[in-house]
Image 1 (cartoon, helix red, strand yellow):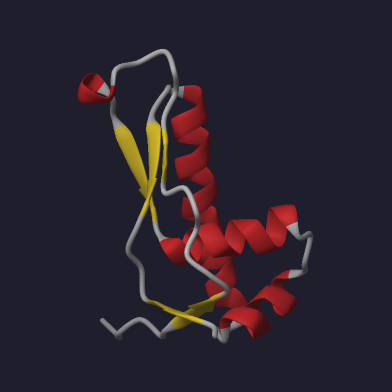
Image 2 (cartoon, helix red, strand yellow):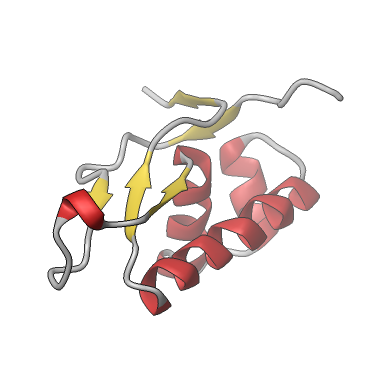
Length: 97
């Protein structure tokens, strides 16, 4: 398997743990969203950029953005539908100055 290419992100997300109010943290299942998945979601869904633009900002190929987005959206949907926490950590990232 090839090593992952470094993905560039603007900054570390401020809040890195989101949980539903209805469950105690001790009995809460969680999904892990990587920092590069978070950045791709932020740029595509919040900033409304095209995949090619996001690829340029993160310094990866456009097809890599597609591969990052699919599991990220599935994880977020799983967390929302099944009352799971979202923990943002890890990934092969470097931060822009």
